[in-house]
Amino acid sequence: MNGPLDTAGAWRRLLTVRTEADASGAGLRTGEDGRWHWPNALPEADDLADRYLSLCLAGPRFTFAQLGQSLDGFIASRTGDADYVTGEEDRCHLHRLRALADAVLVGAGTAVADNPQLTVRACAGTNPVRVVLDPQGRVPLEHKVFTDGAAPTLWVLGADGERGASGVGAGVDVLVLPDRAAFGPRRLVHELARRGLGRLLVEGGGVTVSRFLHTGALDRLYVTVAPVLLGDGVPGLAFPGPARMRDALRPPVRRAVLGEDTLFELDLRAARSGQDGAQPLGDEDGDTGQAGDEGEQPVDHGHAQAL
Image (cartoon, rainbow, N blue to C red; front, side, top):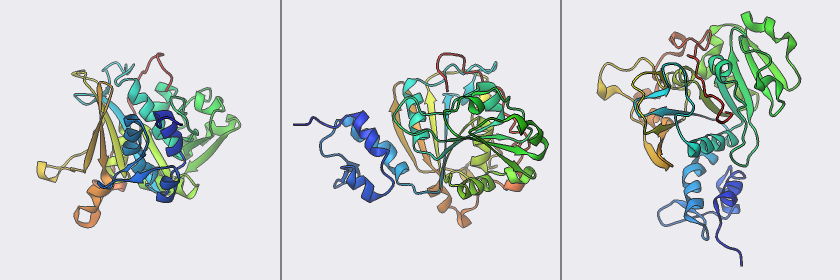
């Protein structure tokens, strides 16, 4: 007789789910409370279903983002050290989000400073396409996203940065956008979906995630908060806010514990549908989030774990 379903088995099943029929085929059942669960599973396996099933079922067009930060809102110290703000459980969570995405997107500043791999290694799953926003063409060609061959890479350049693409290797596609407006988050989401990359994870850094949030391009935001105080540093979310507290965005939220950290899952799609006219927070064309250069402040994650 088989034992109860464990977390590894539950995660492998979740990777196959994109519809409710898939969920039923994976052995999930709905309880009286309307929540999905496995009839014979460890509690940790049902926790995975509760945390990730809605993302599995979100459909082929869905944009979500993840940030890990200190309790006072910083993703790195004032010197750029981020090794590491959040713990190992959050790293596994991030890799699970990658596994549920068609593409993972970072700005040029993050790509330059972190030299990330952006692959799925802390859990089972397929590597997403790596999208690097680099209007000025400043990410070095020797960085991992261009050389390791671990996953396809889409290098998104502006007209000024196109000259640096001549030495790009196999497995790297180049997309040249004509002007600053073409780098607007909602236009980028549309362009990537047109290329079959509709499930998009915006991973960093803080400037890029903030731009996607401020222009209404995100459907969901995951923020993991570590119980640490920095006092000063590289901010996570930062965008022009409302003058009155009552006008602040208050999306529906779910919370989960990841080791010592707390994960906040913000349903931005539901928040927008509750606003009059469902308008984004800001005007994309008037955005001041440095769309021209994706100007992230350098963040150094050190050498403890590759990103």
